[in-house]
Amino acid sequence: MIKSPMQNTIESKTRNIPRASGVYIMKDKNGRVIYVGKARDLKNRLRNYFGGTDSRFMIPFLVSKIHDLDYIITDTEKEALILENNLIKEHRPRYNVIFRDDKAYFNIRINMTDTFPRFQLVRRAKKDGARYFGPYPSSASAKETLHFIQQIFPLRTCGDKELKSRKRPCLEYQIRRCLAPCVDLIDSEAYRRLAKDGMAFLIGRENKLIADLRSKMNSAAEHLNFEEAAVVRDRIAAIENTLEKQRIVSMSFKDQDVFGLYRQGNLTQICALYIRKGKLIGSKAFPLFKVGIDTSEILSSLLKQYYDGDVFIPQKIVVSEDIEDEAVIEEWLTEKKGKAVSISVPIRGQGRGLIRIAQRNAENICKTKAMTESNAEEAIMMLAEHLHLRNLPERIECFDISNIGGQYAVGSMVTFVAGVPWKQDYKRFKIKTVVGADDYGMMYEVLKRRYKNSENLPDLIVVDGGKGQLGVAVSVLNDTGIEGIDVVGLAKGEKEDRVYRPRRKDHVQISKWPAAMFLLQRIRDEAHRFAVSYHRKLKEKGDFQSVMDEIPGIGKDRKNALLTFFGDIKKIRNAGVEALQQVEGIGTHTAEKIYAFFKIVDSLKS
View 1: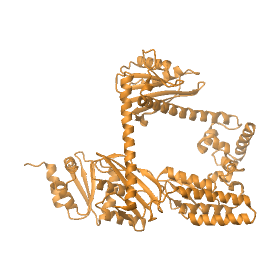
View 2 (view 1 turned 135 degrees about the horizontal axis):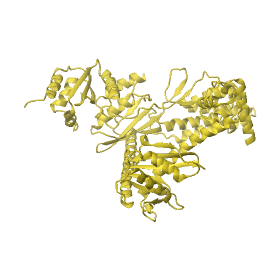
View 3 (view 1 turned 120 degrees about the vertical axis):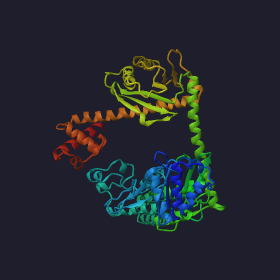
View 4 (view 1 turned 30 degrees about the horizontal axis):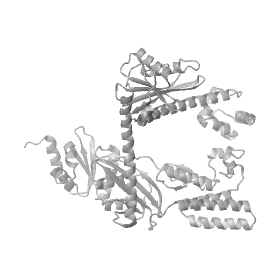
């Protein structure tokens, strides 16, 4: 049998490869990296690939795609693991498991060197002398924690500039969410004690914190400071109520991450449970992905990629089955954490119970996603059938108009592909040719601007409105010479929404088929949201310009400078003289004039 030059090249490389730890890089005929792997013994691993002794079912398929092979030798298996991670991040090979979860996780930050420290959410921890808590398993859990902290420990939430420029307490003080350090209603020492109590809660010293708070409450009561005692009492009750909601799920009281998998064919869904000090504090669903490799390899890829990011590494990681490179991953994580980290596969007891919980959650998430996709496909089929469309509406474009009496008039176009939003093709239009409240004229302008070049045409056009808007859409298609596209109008009715088709007198009762109706409503509502958000943006900018026009001596350049610096008119209204002076071109006299103007406006409103 005559071998191809490609086969001879690969065989030559595998014959001469050393018995050493390292990383191998497989490429296709176009030179693209399609798979990256690591091995303790490169020669043995690659012999298994090309000698037919690797029993994994995807290996023959992968080998058939390989046209070139490179490798990099490392001193240790741990170095190979780190290199493998970096190469996967760089090349994102097609046949590796890629967990597309590159965002940074939220941390809660407080800088105790500030005179009046505050808790704030940040994406990344820095070496700036501040104290960071986290990272949290999800943005929701971080925001929920911060919200609780701000309710129970009423520290400031405003920025440093606002703190320095404020002359009177804000709304946060009025609703007892802040003690107004900005106007010296609390001294720095008392404020710092409150900040330290908040830190004690985040660290997990709840019992000591509650004991200290009880002591403060009793002391305040003994000195007849009943109002202060009542505030501390409510703080204790809120903390105890939060702690009661956290269920004890592990008596080992170790920090653990538990990973459960659910597989359906080539689809894999992973769910992680986060256990801290024996309590289940949250979970995370990873993106559903499709790859035909062993569960053991999926778990290995998950752990290496997930913990390579900016996440908390627990003492114990619990998985459902053994991993080939478990020992080297443990060594790598131990070095990263600075403390011993273990990976375990529980057979019975609480550990196995936690795995079952994670697996059930993964199964539920997978089936819910599949159901959603199935419903979208079913809804598309129903639309085609019951609206008697010429084409299956795989790509749908929907249009809406937003204005107030013709002012700040805008149009929006949203695109759905296969029943889901396709946001890169969203468009928004500022009305240019229509004067006054002419919705039909505005719809004509928007549709004409979209379809004048007949590019990337949809299968179905949906307009928000009844027969009138539908007639406008048909006119635009006729005027532009476009044929073969279906058009419908979706109008709100008193009891149910109505769908109109061209050349049909009565509306179609699409409500008989809820899945189809829901899809149309979802698309229409998204178009409405997109139009209204653009309309509000233009209106806010217009309101800002008109209000600022009333202040003598404020020209176009200064207006633009103020808007650029503060972002919106609300912040300018609330800014003090010192903050206004920081804007380029705004001196002391002008800042005082702007500040006085808005105070007069506010007093007239009240």
